[in-house]
Structure formats: structure tokens, C-alpha cells
Image (cartoon, rainbow, N blue to C red; front, side, top):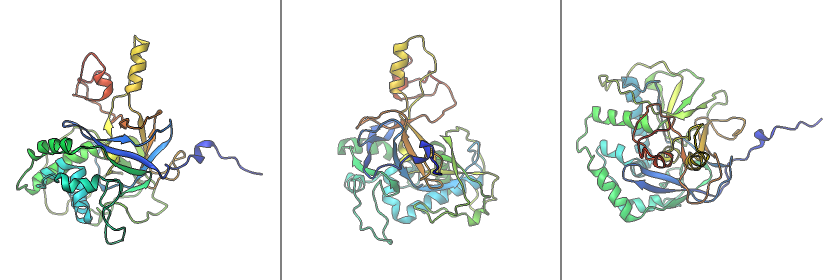
Length: 338
């Protein structure tokens, strides 16, 4: 007797075709990802390995273990032949670590759709699509004028001689806003044994299972703590914090409210609401996704050139929000839909 699997188990991985382009949304927002072709509702857009993996705590408070892990993850990403691309992708973090923004001449080849380096084991590719497992990076829509205006503002934040405390606090702020919480089922090894190597990572044991919490890390807790350069004790946690080269660049858009006095207003907000969602690790709908890898899925039909967005799951009300949903309200940029 033949067994017929439910359709959700037969969902295909993203196509090996141009998927996303990088663009500059504005000086305040920074980069954004834009669809390189049309996508239909529920279609998977791309599947990507993490660039950095560090420890996670629920409140993202500044304990020594967490900050040590984050800084080590960032240093490993820079040392892995990727300083150029990591600095270009996250220029504010680089500036707070004493690294100036790249010039347009240096940025151009990395923004391109293809690597400028040979594909050999001793040379990591220097372009934004290097960690993609499915889907392809289609290049940049950023002009020289846009880029130079943007990095001029970033340069004002450059710390010429950052201390160890400066660097660790910069990484804490960065992971707080750009990382995704990734659940794990294995115990954490001692902090001194935790590998902080960026992806692509070595094969993972099939007994390790990771799942997404369907919300990136956005806690604003900033409890202070003394900074220690020695190996810190291991915290109690069952999660990692992962940074993705492309996935972490997708911007926030508020979800439309469930009720409205106007059907027209409700429809327009729905059109402006987030158009993507994500999953981390394998699931029934995305069995092909590897542990800790992120897969981006279209929440509705997306047209070529449209910016990809999702809801960060922010909890605080009244924050300044520049998403399309909030821009369409009478309150302007002050978020009124939470």
C-alpha cells in the first residue's frame, strides 16, 4: 500500500535562481533586501547559513559570559577571511570597533552578484551570497552617491582607539538588534570550548535539533555589568543568538491591527504589512533547512523590486518606526499599531 504524504512535507527548497538584491533604504534605516524576481505566497525565497553564533540570554543583559561570546563570534567572523564583507554588511558595528567604512571602490566588487575570488577551500568568497544554500544573491541597487552619503554618517560614529569594554558593548548592542534566537536541545559546553566559527559550519550531528521561536531578539534591556577579559562562567540557557549575512538585513514592518473601523484602511494596511516570515531549522514545511540555518518565506505575493520585511515582534509602544504600515497612519512615524 502506498503512503501519500501531506502536501506540507513536499514543499520544495528555494529555486537556484536570483532571489534578492541589497539596497539602501535610508540613512536612519541602513540596508534592506529587495526581491530580485516575483514570488508567490508561501514560496521559499532563500536559505542561508549563519555568519556568527553566540550565546543568548532571555533579557539580553550585559553579563560577562554573553558579551565575551558575542565579541569572540565577531572576531572569528573577521578572522575567517571575511573582514571586508562583515565590515561592509554591518558598518556601524565595525566603526564602534575602530574599523572605518569601506571605500566605494572596495565595496563595489563585494556588492556584485558574483565573487571576485576563486572558489577554493583556502579562500572564502567575498560577496553577500556566500552563505546561501538555496537561492542566489542578485547584486546591488546601491549607487555611489547613496553609499557615500550613508557611510559619511557612519564615519561620525568611528571610535579611533576602542577599549575592550567599548568593543564588547558594541557587540551587545549589535546582537540585541540583529540576532535571532535559535533554540537548541543540547547542553552548552564550557565557555572555553564553545566554537565561535562563522558559517558555513561543519556537519552537525542529526541528534541536534534547532527550531525558531518565530521572533528575532529585540529586547531593549541593558543592565550593566563589569567586563571581564578572562574566560567567563557558562550561563544557563538553551538558545543561541545567530546573525545572518542577508537574513539579518531584512527590515521590520509592523503587522496590521486585527480590527479597523474602515475596510479601506484595513486593506491598505494589509498591503503595507510584512511580506515575509522565517523559520530556523527543519520543519514539516521546510524539511530541507539545516540546524541553525534560516529560511525566508513569502507571506503574500511579492513583486520584483519590493522590499522584503517581517515583524520583529517589538513589545514597546510608541517607539519611532519608519515602516510602511506606520507611515500610512495619521500618527506618522510613531508606531500606533502595537
